[in-house]
Image (cartoon, rainbow, N blue to C red; front, side, top):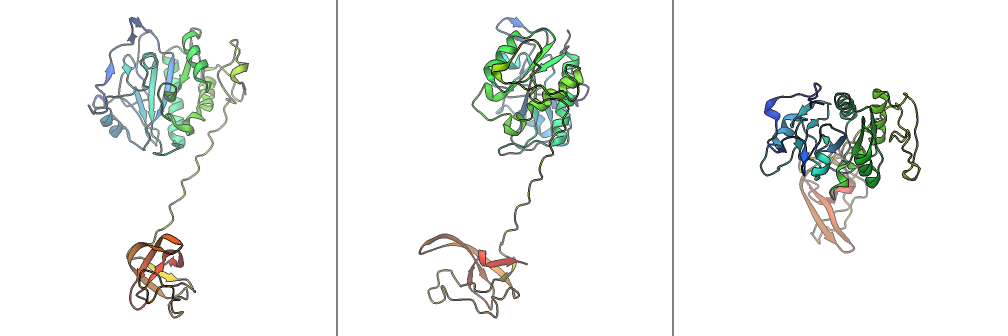
Length: 308
């Protein structure tokens, strides 16, 4: 079967990475068909031009066949006929299509619903163009890599970067979505009926019809919880009120520990922060305090202040 590229991805020649191995040959063995898909996370939000630029850096010397941004836009960096340098495993990459997906920078490396839907569409297209009728997924390295070598014609396997190198990729968020992704792909390929559930454990695997789907079916993608906004922070220039009972602090022994006058510490008087500092006191370390403007003109713990 001749290798083709996905019409779903932007194939702008300016996006191409120079870091790949021509063809699909390793140790004298030429692979004439794709039978693996490996989804990765970028460990930081990206757009397609930026990811393309990253894969063109000599200091990086890495690439993937495709990339997906937060909005589901797709770009191609290495043609499918060539081996991308993505998964820290030549044995995997030589037979796989690799896809980098934009993610949060920190664990669990969340990926947007739009990016997941885009990845599912791309995986379906990859399978259809490469003659794959059924995909397998099981979160067990030994089983998956054995299946990679022994599957029947027309079958494929999802693999994970973390199986080949000591890193978190594709991140726990995407890793736990792989069964759902596999189920959606298999439903589109006709390998399972929409809504069908196939539950299994590694010890229960049978070679006569298990599709590598854990509660696959066509369940909707669980919505990504919105990231809560960071609480507003008191900074120099902030307008604040002072809670009743607040005490003066700082390093001025004359005033340290004395209650702020109720003329100001009443929750109504508005003062301006002119300085922020961390102070240490007996029994308390690293207390953040704000120095307030005249006429208060005292250090007060920010925990005793309310932003206006």
